Length: 240
Image (cartoon, rainbow, N blue to C red; front, side):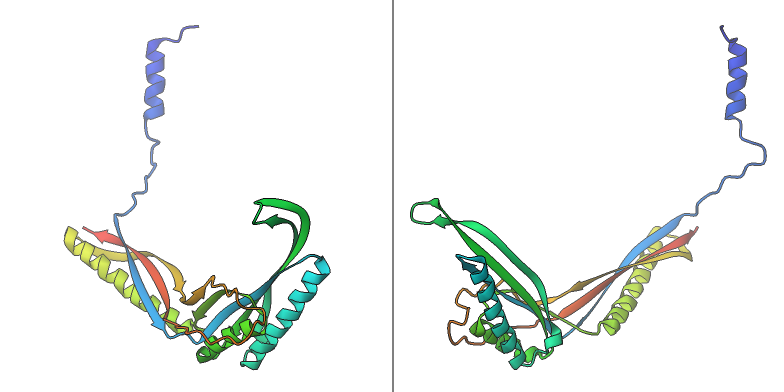
């Protein structure tokens, strides 16, 4: 059945017409700005991760040797002032693999077992980090996978960085308003983001001469600075 053209036009007009009394919300014009604030301090704690990687022809041989060397390495860390409660196992793995012959460039068909065991230690005396590294390597550790410096109590740094970021956000908003010839009105919203920048000494450093091979000198370690950066975003209504 064909619908008359006049009827279709009437339906379109009714559909497009606004509902009587309906109000539409008009969002205010706004200015948004993001401020940055960074606070830094000298680190007072170092996180040191050390461990062993042992390969033997039998699983019990690999497990026993790894256990012996790690016990010796942790005892050496304690002798340098690291408390037992400040050491924690971060990973322990055992797997089997086929022996590769570097001369023939082929697998031999024989199997060997590998054990890796890593511990993270919190060193509260920054000046002793190098001595701790040397002690654990001399005692049996053959791998150092990271040394990270940080601040134990960061509350004051966060507060300082937050205040700096807020001031920076306000200054930027005022500059934008002046540049566009408008005035700032009421504050509409505030948001915050944070991030931390660690000071680094060693990262993924490997001591292939470890495993209790002999005397190891204390390596030079530089803590650097520990920084916290806060971002604060502020949105203001624009007064025309």
